[in-house]
Length: 124
Image (tube, rainbow, N blue to C red; front, side):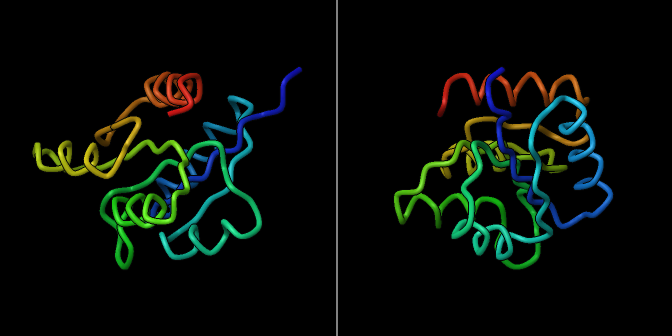
């Protein structure tokens, strides 16, 4: 059996963070939860995940800013950006920041797992 993929979930909304974590653990992923971009960035000294799920709109460092900071120091972690925003600016900004996947809230667990598996398979 291959090792489980490590997924970081970065979302300031605790219910969202916990629900996503529960769903991914049930799907046999190794999950670490972070309530802020700052906490996630600080954790990278100890362990780098295989993929990250980033809320776009968070207080402090946004999900897009997390991606930009990682790219500025040549750290490549595939990212799935999630948001409740309805406008196309989100799509352009997320892609410009290097998002490998995009999901608008609310989304199904099945859709999240599909996008996550695609991102992991391509290793973007």
